[in-house]
Length: 466
Image 1: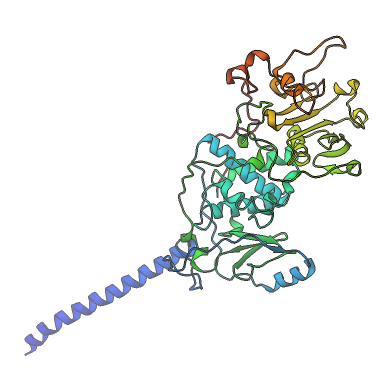
Image 2: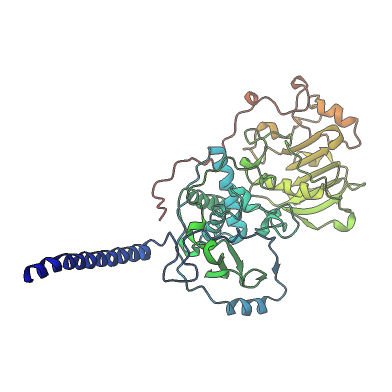
């Protein structure tokens, strides 16, 4: 019996030892998983919070509605915003993003991202990086477009309700200084090369504390940076698994609104030709009636000093310094909806005529001109290359050597002479008869200008994306 008893008990003891071993192994694995999750919370949030789900839920992708802000009562908005608590769930940093498109796409993406950073945050590196991270977070979230420029300019066709307000509220009429623009581009390049701004985590929304968006109570408030509050989607859609890890961008679109600021967003980036490839003018707008009462008003980069009888010609004194391309913004605003229009501008107030016609003596000091005769297909942007020596020759105004010297006969003269709008004698497109129709010259006829801020796919040394 004793022998039989011992033989019967041995299997049961073995099973107990095996069971105990399995329990210890399970505890060890759970502990290891918890430790790993606490250090690398990339699968889902920890601590059993409300965002702890790791599998994609059945709920649909959140809808992105037009942005509507209430800025009518800043003090009340600050109080209400302060009453919304910050989320107590973890705030993991976004993964590094590295642009994988070609050089043209990278240039376009860089300038779109830089524009969002600079116009939204001003010339402030911390704010710019926070805005840049939100753009990249949106890029990787299924609720938003899949190009950098598409994210930044989503809804820009609206007069209000765009996703980033600077794209539709007229803010782009203010051209940034070159130094600020270069700094913003440098930050954008770094972020498109893998740099992460950790503080905002997975945020896809933000606003200043003195406005009240209708959605701020429906999202998780994550952090505050200066006067800006940052938010992420509630639930699974605000967790890291909802964001695409690898994203291939096939092609970044050309954004016409950036054409004055970015060579990469011109339809002909390789030729700074005076022929405007896509019209500067918005023909869908009704022309604004401007008369003598408009004299002295500020329009973009300068002040209006004269209006031609009939309201289709304008003279301005424009601000000196900075990028001369911004002068075209004034032309776009003054000539909107006009089939015939011209803008003549001087940087020297003492040289600016006060009425039409333009005196012969004032023409040599003219800094900028824009001419449009829609029915004849003429649209020209020209500069005084004595004042702006880096301007490609094709964009230079024709100058007279003396009173008896006549400018070469141009095809544009013949077309303009038959139109209702005459070109000033000192402002002539540099298109020669031998070149045929009024088109840009062949690419080999003009030295290809190097983009001042050409973007290389190489990451500058020392840019740690951590």
